[in-house]
Length: 178
Image 1 (cartoon, rainbow, N blue to C red):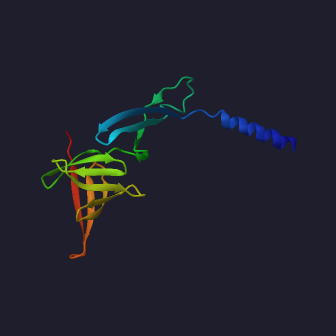
Image 2 (cartoon, rainbow, N blue to C red; image 1 turned 135 degrees about the horizontal axis):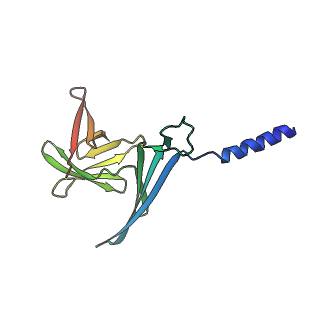
Image 3 (spheres, rainbow, N blue to C red; image 1 turned 135 degrees about the vertical axis):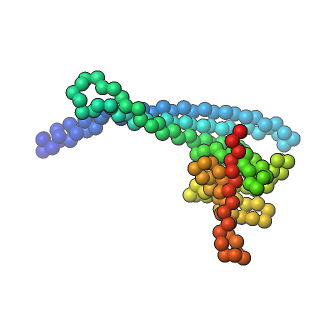
């Protein structure tokens, strides 16, 4: 019994002595914007947390040298943005606010309290994008409802069902890189 107890204590101590095998850098940036209009004063709080994680690997791990050089490994960057407006907090993994083109028409997608709003160049609201539970979006315009997502290039891809042709129509809003 005494051997088992001492073995368990030794095991617990070895768990705490393990070397760290990752470099972690975390940065939190908070921006408070006050907007005054005819309805009063509103505060918009944007908190962005950027975390960089890099695995530690050695160049010659099998050698008997005492001091070993680190090997460059890729850095994984994750950014989480939380926007609080009117007491409602919206968490955004990646801010997709930008300008997009579709058939020569330019649209502006901007972050809103519950997702994104899409505007025409004359600042008229064209559509809304609302996030679903599986990181996709529901696109709702005046006479159209579609399923949307952002591809690897940052473009907004909409998929709509056409009941007349019984097919899915794919439209791609190309992100304008300025």
